[in-house]
Image (cartoon, rainbow, N blue to C red; front, side, top):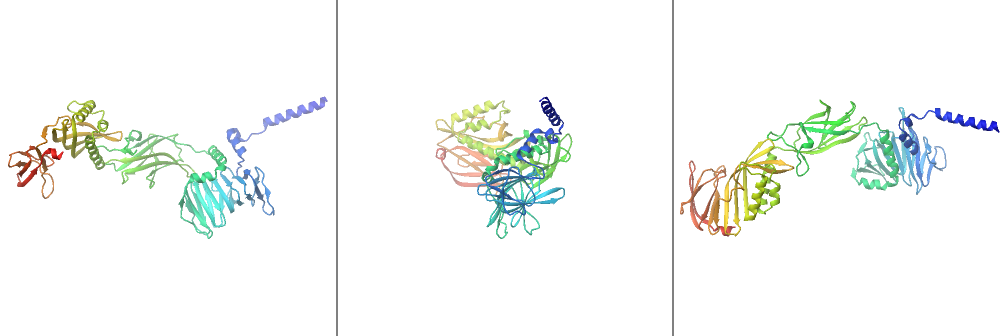
Length: 556
């Protein structure tokens, strides 16, 4: 009895010693979670393994007549065939880089071809619904009836029946080479092709990728596990962009327009001939890593290592002012990962001038519809002028004008634009008119104005004024029972306005001079018919007869 106890005690001690000195796998010691994931899901390098089956799934070894039910974690060899029954599903892994999913009613056969040091798996499809997922590998070739399919890094579906074959790339890019063709046909993500029973290939057709994934939702767990395993095995680095500069200006500080475009504003200068793009990345890239700048998906530029830790490139300014800039990181296997994307618009003087004209037109319309909110929002908080007025004074003036006057009409004629840094000085002629609150008198004011505009938070705003527009009360009171004579004098040949021409009403002796726009106006003329005389040195005298003047009240 004592000998038996001593024997079992010695045996237990020996087993414990053997376990303690047994060499653990290197991968498990370095990363226990990774080892557990690989062992749980059954991925084995350079082996073809059934990692999951549900329902009737059968295997046939080369040279055997019958089919046998498969066993979980079964390893297949060269020449083996797989067939799924009416309700059979199978998940097969080839090494750790490829996954094959089979739906019911599928039949395939495997062939292992030695290519260098790594064998290549060839899958011959008879009639099947097959999903192929590949990561960093070209070691799986799908042989259809009329051609072969490869998936380098991505996912694709292959449906084959008696009438046609259907190929769809659901992730990444797939390549299909028809039998006898020298070059394969590329199928981009989100597109598919059909191959009829005669081997003819249809044109690329877009489809809904979400619906395609939904058709294979039974395998969602295995696809997620496959992605997790790939991320754990990957040695690539995820880069983060810290700083981006264009022409030595930080992108994050650039203004945005109403469409969300970042504005590259040269200020008083002309549009830049080149764009100097610089960025910093975390962590600092390795010598083997590459970065490319895509402009509007047509132009590609390589970024080079520059000074002070920046990667940079100089490119010619595109023809169109709007551009999309995307920076991709390209790893050692040629895969692209987007690390930066932004939309830009390049402002030039012509574009700014058009926008300012549009802004002044909106300002006139806001006065007409008595839009106090628009008027408040489009005066800069930094407003200051030579009269000592601030933003609060300007807003109070608007409130008073809208409360005391009716039928306010503002006409602005900008004619000169001077660019000064980020501001634009606009010379304009104006005419402002309004009815009094009792609808008895119409007041009018006309003259010139120098207005300073600035682009703030995606909109133009009034930063300053040099003269009395908006602050001077209407200069002329118009009796609505009387009339107004107004017009414009221009050169007959060139059409340009004539400045300083004398306009006179013969019957009354009233006269005035044309302004810088060639326009004139004479107030409070009794209704009737008059003769006008227009003269200027160097042009002679022009007489217009029987000019009718109607009461102002009829016009307004």
